[in-house]
Image (cartoon, rainbow over all chains, first blue to last red; front, side, top):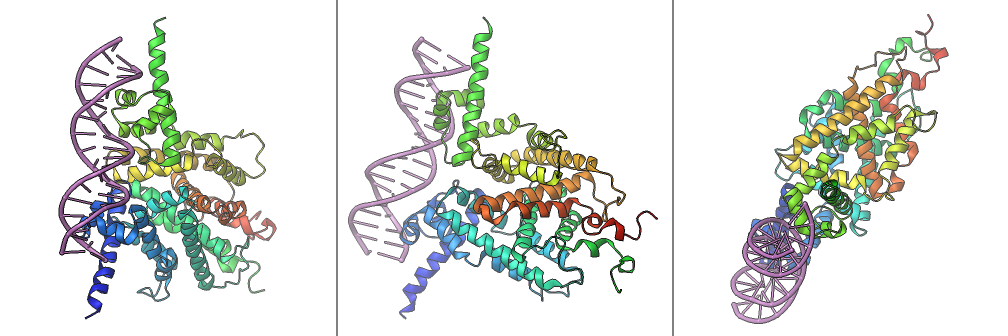
Length: 218
Length: 218
DNA sequence: GTCTATACAAAGATAGAC
DNA sequence: GTCTATCTTTGTATAGAC
């Protein structure tokens, strides 16, 4: 078949990317040689240069490969049919996010994310690309939150656009995971959920029994 | 004087640490050679090994040198006499934090912070040390928030210990700065302040005119 | 496109003089 | 303690065969 060599090429590319993702996440970009990546992918360093032009290109491609990125990940996390009828959507959000960065998973997402971020923060080339990904994640989250409910208490106390609410939620999730990574006990689920609630809940609903709300049912 | 050589020793140590802080922040730990640090400090690489045993030791010492760390920094930021009579303490908090990580500053605090975090997240030795620093920061912030006001609406809707509230605020600050670093326009001050308010403000006060609160003054 | 072999550069670290 | 000089290792990248 003619597909054989094409398949092999695509296969090599994928193997290299997978290996790079795992190694970069585990040991850090600088600590991993192009040779090490090739070895882990059962190839040789030459193939790295043939496909990506070098180690930096591998990082670039890794980003490209994740085009959907946070956006898709969040979409999946927030999907309406996320396994169960959400008894508490905020709790579900945190569970999913926490699970996706768990230490047990092979390619450690959170560390790779930070690895990418650190490079992007310094690189005029990578910066905008990663920024776009974050923006997409914010927007996706924000749009989803907007569908959660249009409560009678809307508009929100200080009106935030969907993307702006996404910015806050993404920030909290990232910051919580940073702390949890260094000390899991520092961020019990209870605290994380409470924080998300404070960002997401319309303040009124959280604390006031509707029966006591002087503006309701009047 | 007998102090001469001791002074020189201490001076060298300080110069090396300062140079390392700046270079590590600017280019990243791995991208900076021990030689480069020594050069920037007007010394030679030998002195790096004499003082710190190697490049890694330099990073360790850098952390130690920051023993006060976030805690002290936050203490300064939150000090009651922070220049002006706070018209809005939340806004002041954000301003100070944003300024402390501004791109203009020579040793870029935020990037060095992430550099340290990334190493700590992977190192059984560095991890606990950095975790302790974060904990100190959380507690310092939390204790300070507790003094802001004991409103009649206390206890809080879901009672959080001071350190737990600090966890949430620190998380939001870190996450917002991460996003702002990649795209300053993505995190306008307005949004950041609103986020902090949602975490810090007792929900009731934020939205309800006390005149409408059925439980007040009764 | 992939491999083997190798050139070339850079950085970590040490030895010994002062 | 600090410097100069150097050793050793490691990693990037390329050339050429298949």
